[in-house]
Image 1 (cartoon, one colour):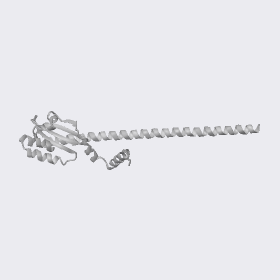
Image 2: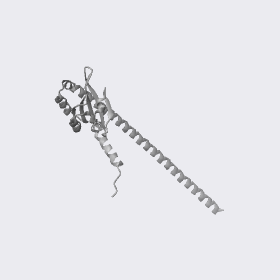
Image 3: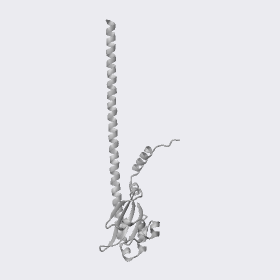
Image 4: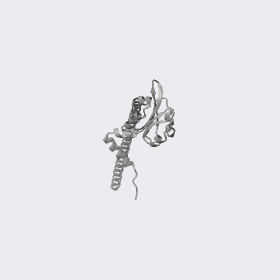
Length: 202
């Protein structure tokens, strides 16, 4: 009888130990799942924040592009009215040194090229090469470029309500965003890119 009691007590202890270990494993699994859920939520929050910040930066950069084109069009209006191409060229060449300017063009209403930073467009002298869309605008118009990160803006140059020509700007929104990004964010972005990039196997 004593042996049965010992065996019964040992079995009870084993069951208790097994239950304790099982409970610990369940608690650990719940804890790991909770930690994983929190990490996932944090990652999503950071991704949403980065996306919102990037969208905001792109909107600001695009607004800067509009401001640049409006100022340029207003500045060259007298030269266009007087037919002084050298004045238009001087203003355009100066603008090309500004951050984010990927291209600048001034087109006559008949499609002639008054100035273009595109060598091919300047050589042909005919806006049909790339600028048909710009000649059709009646107000400031924006469209995405085929060049990555570049946005195109076009608007008529007017005098006393009469259109004289069209100013067409190619604005590198991506470059402007990168130039204005704080150094710590650039380093973080570079780190994420290098981490995400697959490694080549030899």
